Amino acid sequence: MKRDSFISIVFLLIGITALLAMGVYSPVTENYRSPSVGSSLSERADTILKYNEENATRYFWDCANPINGLVRDHSESNSPSSISAVGFGMTSLIIGYENGWFTRSEVYDRILTTLNYFNNTTQKHGFYYHFINMYNGSSAYNSGFSSIDTTLFISGALFAGQFFNNTPIQRLADRLYERINWQWMTNNTSLLNMCYYPDSGFSHYYWTDYSEALLMYILATGSPTHPLPVSDWEYWISTWRENGQGDLRHWAASDESMFTYLYAQAYINFKNLNFNYVGNLWNNSKRAIEYDISFAQSCTKYETFDQGYWGISASNGPTGYEAFGAYPGGTDGTVAPYAMIGAIPFVANQSKLAIINMWDIRNKTYSTYGFVDAFNLGQNWFSQVYIGIDVGIEILMTQDYFNGMVWKYFMEIPYVDNALLDLGV
Image (cartoon, rainbow, N blue to C red; front, side):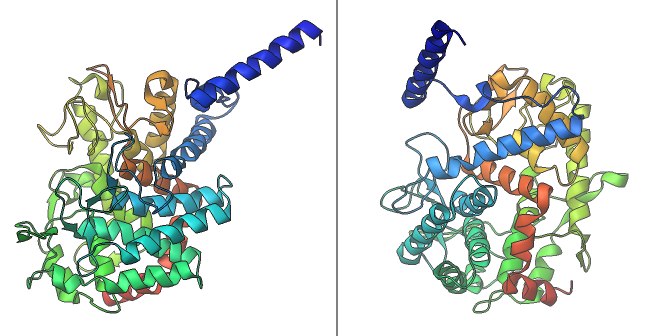
């Protein structure tokens, strides 16, 4: 190598290092080495997917307060914490450790810090505020004590406890789970209430219809201290309704937002579980996702769908956060990459095609923590803000697709096993 060329390369490397330090240059897409031309589409998609998973896990390290483990609801610096993002974060950091992206001590110490904080922060019968200040733990956005967000937090805690079994993490996770009084959250009914507000009491809304509450009702049934009776589960599923025709008929969420078919499935392996009356809920999610794809294909007036994208789910949108869903009037053509990626255990071929197509326009659809939260081709809009729970479900479902790791540990939790036995599966 000539001396002048060597010097040029040295100065180039120094320049890139300086830009990295200033946050001007992002290695996320620039340093990516595309799979070889000879790779199959499936192999290429898997390579992109693993790369995306690694970048996504960084969200839960970078967007967290290391003093208490609280994770931002969204990536903007003024964001409060979402306790559901904290739950997804604990699971995601463990996935990062298993893949060699974090050390064991980094992950263990961060999770122990998190659980110690929740052991002492404000709670009501074991339930936590949905949104809390990143620094002092006070309620943010006037949020109340949320049943579903506490569920998503405790799911991550229990997963961490099972992974780091026979450690202080497991003992703390068990303590926090046992403290949750599910019976109190029913407000003397047969349904779980959505939220309790310190100033006004229980909300006017209860969990009915199929939804992400599937995970909550299972954990509530398995509680060793304040369990819901099986009759409450039976009453809840009696409120479910179906949607779709023929092979696409499924137990449906009221807004047909795709995330509702992913959250419980990220932790519990429903593949071989058959419930009385409602049947196999793995197959149900698969049919619901296929319904979403079919719905998008029929809405060709929207450029995003006309280009073959789908994944209609709650996400950022051109005019703000929206609970987009696959029903007439429920979409403006915005799609969520996390939904297309999260569906990969169910519809691998369709997900992989979407991943490759998104990667081909990565100058618009990819940034620091992986694929953007949402985009709308017709409006030439691409989200600039990540949402913690969307990043989290994407990571969990990706890892389940690769090796079923989240299912493996979560299904070994005795409380989960007991709940499923009580429910007759």
